Image 1 (cartoon, helix red, strand yellow):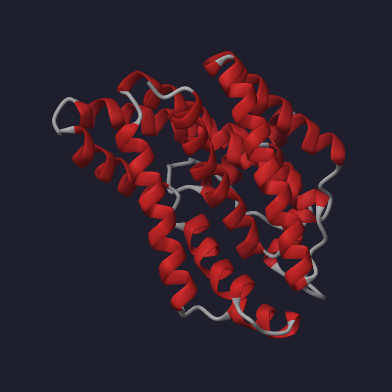
Image 2 (cartoon, one colour; image 1 turned 90 degrees about the horizontal axis):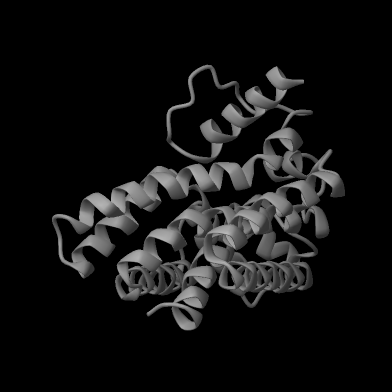
Length: 252
């Protein structure tokens, strides 16, 4: 059991980040649900790396330059995986077309106008939040924000139907994902956020889960469920929403 858990953790690191994961196996059917449980832990690992990067940048660069480089590092460490899903989701979900056409637009790798505008707004909001957060608050936020967003996406994957018929990468993440696994992932993310940020961490978790629920509900209205691209959008919206919430409630 310990060996399987370690293998799932390494597989999650290898798939969802560009961080080295020696001995990581490729995610395969029947094991993806195990990897999903580890998403908050992957988020904490990512957050810890980002916090260290931030400390180094603050020693060399002024706040806004450091925030820009930190955002670049954040995107690079995830391989832009979730950002790519967010951009595709903007094009597909915002299109004034029937649900079937929206699903086809989600498959299109080319970025349309909604993706460009949505991506600019998302990155601008992330950058501004990182730049405006006081140094100590930003370090603490970086530790928990990636984990909260990934805990929320585990919930969204299980709570809402998969939009496409047949097989798909997104369906692999949903198949076998039980509510007990969702609860375990949520407990890790929310518990650690509360320890690090106190009541602000708990409140931020509630805000992120609300955002994930609303996005999942809206996507289900638009295309009948969620897809892998929408899962990425849930992560990105959760991250930027958490940063903005921390900035509004506790920053400074």
